[in-house]
Length: 112
Image 1 (cartoon, rainbow, N blue to C red):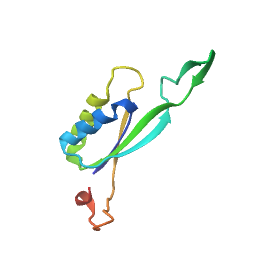
Image 2: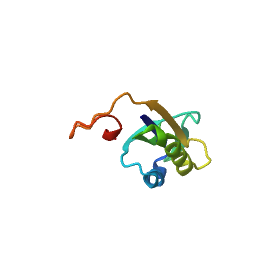
Image 3: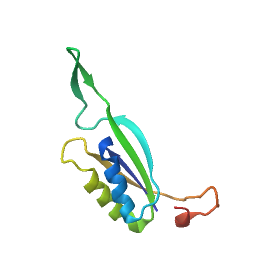
Image 4: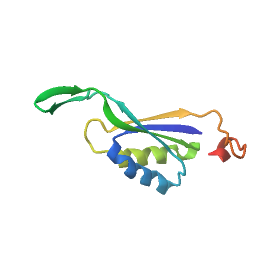
């Protein structure tokens, strides 16, 4: 089992959700976050004054999947979240030691 964490642009959320739903992934957690990478934010002009926006709005998606789905989910996220411009985001894949469904007590892959 793996946890796939993706940081993407907010307007790409619906595209990504649809893409991974087509694969058969049933659950996802979304968090609104702010951050920056190589682009280091940008400057904006507001009422004649220029100011720096260091942290840009992003969306953090977390999807727990069985090991055999990892490559398909990563590919679906990559394709649907890509704009070809700086700041498209990143995908992190980490192992999951154990999963427990609270309602039923199921563990492992059955709990996903």
